[in-house]
Length: 257
Image (tube, rainbow, N blue to C red):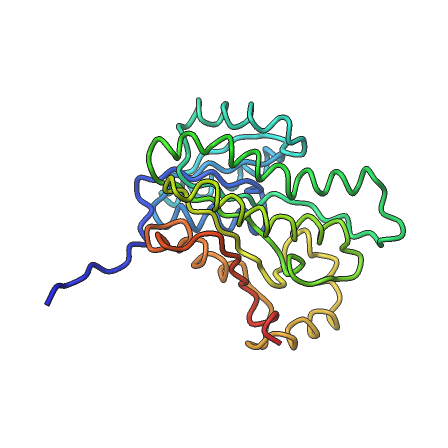
């Protein structure tokens, strides 16, 4: 009987670029990928937060670098990608976690707020991924992980712009997979449920809302950031070689009810 090798979740030798790494989901995933063996470049606007995160993880023996950049203008991301590659090398893993949520009612959101949300949450992930594709293609292997949302599939109050951007991100993930997976570049998305982050701080400040959200899940609790790390490592690793174009809801069963 032929003995098959166990699936590999080891990221040793891979270079991962993670946006939004100064806090929240981006930072948790950046740290998790580094713990799985990757060298990680964290990208964000807030250099002090990036430096504090880097220093903490360097002391823990992880391979961490940082790059300060404002990703809000999709027209700038090609230059940013080139600068990252020049300093660190070509990433084989990209996690698009940077995002914004203006939380404005549909009747009052402005065109500028709408456009800014779509730029950062939808356009920048695509153009940043495209800028890194050539390097992944030259290796014959790559992983792109977008951070989608419950609002990729559900409508929530005061979420019209955010929902539009995250619904679009689910579809662009599938389109990326169609375009690039034949080159060995798998493209997937993680759609978190309710997790405590800076973007959700106003929601988690209301104990009644926290309880309602937890009750809506099948598991009976809201998410902790560590709950996202395993799925991200899976999607970034050789273990997911035959998984592409998918949106994985990590929501405790919220969307199952």
